Every structure is written in structure tokens, then in C-alpha cells.
Image 1 (cartoon, rainbow, N blue to C red):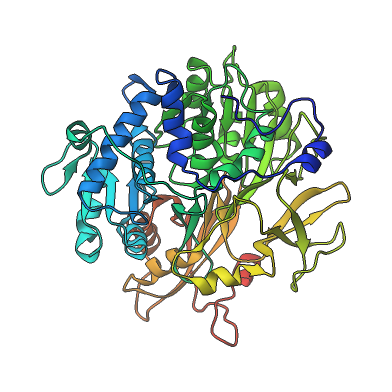
Image 2: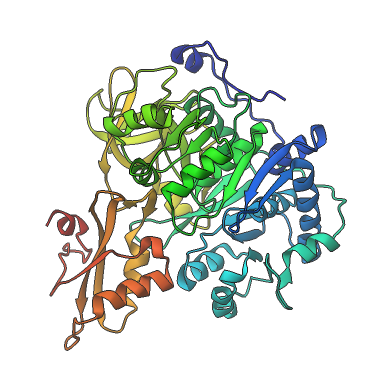
Length: 537
């Protein structure tokens, strides 16, 4: 099945001018990425699952279909219905895909959760989403046990590495369930995936996406990966599949196109191991966050790599990094841009356009963008404004779960505001300039300060807290916290204690690298912390 939207030989302007979205009324990600291939080519390899001990398990589409059919029947027997949420608290691996597809076959919504989340972060997301089921592994069971009493909607927990009642054994449930199922017929606009994103004020927001958002990713995937797919392609990303980058910038698109996908959990990114994986399994297509690329640049590149395409997003790479990719890795690094609410809307395609270091690229076919002012009016080329995306692309989110007022605030007329400041030149190249909010961009993650600050002020010695991003040569930015302590509190040992508190209760990836004590924090007349002054000072 040739599912490519773009045709080799057409230039960028022709591709944009001729492109039209074709979104069917009925569409389901599980059917497209799993069942359709299982019906036509059941023995085709879908996933190369690499265990931590070095074992390799190749999963075919036929095996993925049967396992997800059986798990869907197990879910249905426990009362899961269309629209319910299923938490996926797992590292990269086949169980993630089986769980996503099982939920989607029932019309339920997959809720990816990062395995490094602590109890506070998990409790908020599971409660806010009213998740009915969570699938996890033994490493996260203790965290769930600690908060389950505060989650009245959570009816069932499945564990992938064995469990005793009331926890259900994931693989036993699959083995004992019926393989026969009539999937729920979903519309392209029915909810499919819920991904939480951090904001600058208030708690994280649940970004709700429809099944159609898979289709919205495809123009960028095809162009940033050199008219993907090509014969012999094989994809991998070290980015966790709990984030939209890992899940939708590589994993699901590979399965959509029938391209083998490599899964490997790395507890900590190791550039040498990454290169060994790429060489051993002849990976040709990579999504590598900027931090991973910076670390890989310091490692020895093995001979005989067959890499054909690399995409990267999150921060500008610069001319030297782009040249290293072309000469050392053997493939151009194409920069991509988007956010959880509306992903992969801009890209560089070295096959089709001049690569301009510092620029993100151009708006992909099927996406209308502009740089706008505060009133939603496009500004002249070369003028700094807010990057915005016009309604009408299927990659755009349905809204923030349970927060219609926050959804409305995201738009000015038909323009979805990204919160990122940038420029566009006369030839359509977009360049990122800065954020107009306080999001911290660290190691490819977009980190909101609110959740960290709430955790810090939960310490009995902390009266006030504020977090900002500070320059970091590897991560782009590192999290720095400023705290005001209660009268009489001592500072000795407090910095380390607060860092460990955030690691344990929220997540290690958002924990401050530095904590500075202040007598007071800069405030506006209305009592809001002026984080910009902390950054600039």
C-alpha cells in the first residue's frame, strides 16, 4: 500500500499549491496503523523491540492486531467505554502500542504518561482526566499505590511484568481474552489521544486530539525525511513515546506507512549506545532532539551507517551542527517545528529548499501560517510577532480537556497562537526568536514553571518559589529555582533537599539544576511573580 501524499520530483511551491487534505468521515488510528496492515500483510514486521538484556523480539502487524484485539476485549469486560481514558505509564516497547490500539478500538482515549513522573504529577493527570484504566510496569506500581485512594475514577490497573490481585497481569489478560472483536467505528473528529502540556500559570492542561491528527503529521514527516518512506527505511527515536515528539514524530508515522520501528528504552541517553543501535539495526530514519545530537557529536561515529534522514526540533541547531550531521552521520538534519496543540507545521527539507541555519523552515503543505500582532493581524515580513497557525489543518487539537475558557484564549479569530515569537521572511522561512511566556525549553522538553513551583512551596521551609530557564550548553536551558524561606529556616542542605523533592514528587526531567535563596521575589502590582526579571537579573 502506497500511502505517500507527496510525489518525488515536484518542487516545494508545486507541492504547496496542489496539496489538499483528504480526511475521511470515518477514521481510526488503530485501524490505519495496525489492522489494515495485518489484513493485507500479517507477517510484515511492525516493531523491533530491543530488551535491556540485549534480546530482540520482532513483532508483526498480525501479532500486534491479535494482542490489541484481546486486550480491547479485556478492557471492555472491565467496563471501558467510548470516550473513557486509558493511562499508558510505560517505557518504549510493544506494550505501549498494544495499549494505544486496544483503547482506540473501543473508541477510548489513550493518555500517555512519562515513567519518570512522580506521585504528584501522576495524581493530577489521572484525576483531571478521570482515567478509568492504567497500564504500567512494576517500576511504577508503588507510585500508583500511593495515590490510588485519591483517584475514585480509576477502576483497574494492569501491570506488564506480573502482578497479584487486584492488579491485573497484562500478558495473562491478553492470553485469556477472546481474539474476536468488532471495533467501534469512530469518526475522524472523535477523541483519540490526550497529552498533558505544561503552562506558565495554573496546572498542566490536557490537550485532546482527534484520530485525524495522525493524518495532519504526514506532510511534515514525508518531507523532513526525504520523501518518506523509501525502500529499506527503518525508524527510531530516543524520545519517550509519552511525549508528542516521540509518539507522533516517529513511532505512529512509521506504523502508518508500514516502516519497521525500533523500540529501545534508555534509562539515560547514551550516545555510544545510540550509535551502536543505529548501526546494528540499520536504522535509516531518526528523530533526534537537539540535546541527543549535541551528545552524539561528542561520540565516535561508527563506520557503515545507513542513515538516510534525521529530523530534530525544540531549538535551533546552528550551522556547525547541521554540517556535522551531513558529513559525520551522512544525512541532512532537517529542523521541524510545532507544539503539543498543533504539531509539525514547519519543516526544513534539504531535498527541496535551501537550508538556512537559524531558520526553522517553511510552513508545510496543507498548513496556513502567519506571524501576527496582538490583534491577530499578520505583520510585515521581517517583523517580530507571534507565530500562529490557521484553523483547518487536521493536526490541530480539539481543545483543552474541561477548560473551554483556556481553549478560547488560545485563539484570536481563526488563528491559533503558539506563544512563540518569530519572524517570516519574503520567501516564507520562519525563524524562532523567543517565547512570549515563561515556558522553559530543556533537553527537548517544554517545561512549565507552575508545577515545579507548587512542589517547592509544598516544603514547610519555602514561602515563595519561582522557576526560570537559564542557558545551558547541552540542554539549551536548565531549570533554576528562586525561593524565599520562612523566617528562621537555615539554608544548609536546603538546595539539595528541594532538588530531590521535585525529582521524587514531579519528575527528574523538570527538577531544578540550581536553587538560589532570595529575601524576596520581584512582583507585579497585582501580585504576580515577574519571572522575566529573574531571568534577566
